[in-house]
Length: 117
Image 1 (cartoon, one colour):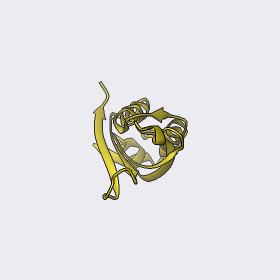
Image 2 (cartoon, one colour; image 1 turned 90 degrees about the vertical axis):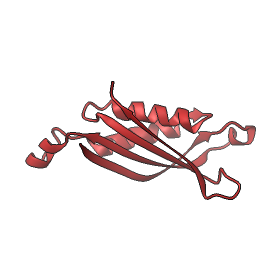
Image 3 (cartoon, helix red, strand yellow; image 1 turned 135 degrees about the vertical axis):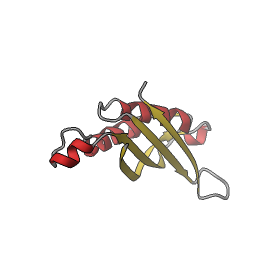
């Protein structure tokens, strides 16, 4: 299985349970691992058979920055579904860091893996 990574994508969105978290956008850092058979693209040096990572990035940015979730888990599920909507992506790993969410840690983070059914 081939992998394409989108690393350290910095975004701002409304996320959180508490009232103070619902009034302003907060920083998040997303890491995506898109998996599929991208060998045809490697053999032909064309985008055919691969996923356009720029398009994935643009759609994820637009979606996350216009969203309003209470839980990181729900946001991660939605981002995973968005990534899996690209036909070349057969599975995805989504990791989200929420800097400043913990009292003494650098961030709170969540990671999920989903496969197309």
